[in-house]
Amino acid sequence: MALASDVAVAVLNGVTWGLIVALIALGLNLIFGLLEIVNMAHGSLYMLGAVIGWFVIDATGSFFVALFLAPLAVGMIGVAIERGVLRPIEDDVSITLIATFGLLLIFQQLALMSFGPGTRSVAAPISGTVSFAGVSYSTYRLSVAVVAVALMAGLYLFLFRTRYGTWMRGVRQNREVASALGVPTSKVYAFTFGLGSLLAALAGVLLAPIVSVHHLMGLDVLAVAFIVVIVGGLGSLRGVLVASLTYALVENVGALFVTPVRARILTLTLMIAFVLVRPGGIFEGDAV
Image 1: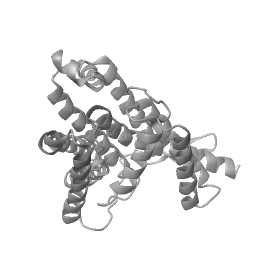
Image 2: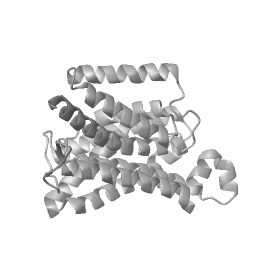
Image 3: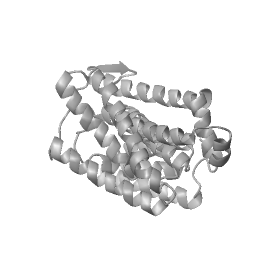
Image 4: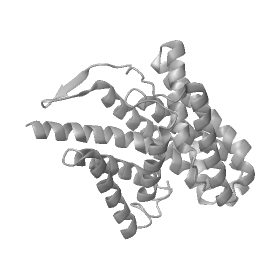
């Protein structure tokens, strides 16, 4: 019974973490799918969401105010990055890589200057546990999983049921034809980068009560996000979700039987093996 309970908790942790990773990676994949920019600063945008959220909570005492304001602020930063930094160089992949990596370092140092080198904690806005089938699990973690699912469902509806979503998909398929048909491609690019940044920041605020907030927290997440984007398939939102859940479940359940470090090594080995067998990802050629 103890093992069954541990496995159930590990699966729940894996699903929650996988959904959050998917939220971060979806923003990364949106930016790559439309702008073809490998955004090295994406992990720092996640970090900025958590750090700005901490400052807002410290000032207002409200987690939900932070959940609204921090992603909005980071989304606006994303729009400014696309307009001011990436727009002039977006056709050169190597230069955009260098530019976004430079932004990663800048954001880290700004967070270090304002936030400090230590770690901070954020109190969960929802306390208590939920018990079912003999398993107790954090109410807040379940809430995070539900919110992440709702956000991804909202993103899907936005992409396939709204004019702006149609424009985004049209620009991805053929930007020249979309522009000729009157689609405001300039606005679509800025909006897409801002939306991807907002999603990363939302994940940062949601995870702040679960993980420690510090200026380097975006590095590990960035590596994981790139892994699941590659395994899921560049430009495929379905693939990112499947890869994120698979990655998190294998790692969390595996940690029950081996050390966490070995579980991470096992997970990465499986991901690498999959990419070698299917380089195009789970849903190769799947557009959005």
